[in-house]
Amino acid sequence: MTMQEAQALTNPFVRCLDGRIGQIIRLRASYAPDATAQDAVGVQVRGEQAIRWIPVQRLRHGKEGLCQEVACG
Image (cartoon, rainbow, N blue to C red; front, side, top):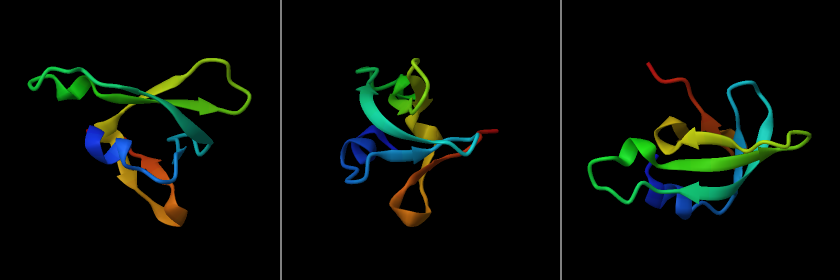
């Protein structure tokens, strides 16, 4: 997924690698055309105080309208 696709999401929920569902509450862009690997979304998972930063390259459109975090590599 690209940063533009992440900004255009109508359903702000993500299924994380551990199976928990969180809500996208922040976007972080690198603002450098050659550093898109730093583009990320901040996901708040219920019961956790820290925001999980997930690179947009690890997000895919998933089932049930949720985005899915996928492992890279």
